[in-house]
Image: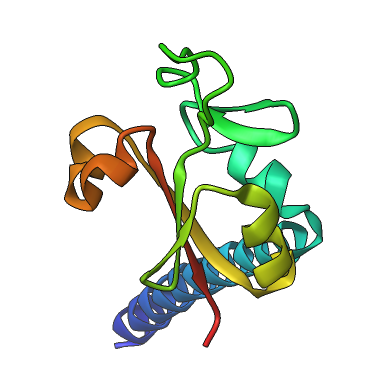
Length: 133
């Protein structure tokens, strides 16, 4: 009888130890997420956009690398900016005045066929910003 009781206690201790490790793992992930969120808020908007795949900075404005060359010299090669579902235009400077980097929740880049839902305005790519509401 004592062997059974000690066996049950050992099993319970193993189960409790396993539960404890999953809790610390979950809390570590939430700490990483909160740190990533805090760091994102201290990074300027231009740098956040520059981190998107296929986007580079030319003359102080974001440009998609595939769309960087233009047939017409002097023509704007900036992508279309969409802020919370509203088309803002093709000027990063206007967008930068409208939104602060601390209010940006997510940034998404669309190019090629993904940007075709915006018609010819999205021909040079689309950058979609979502803010905290």
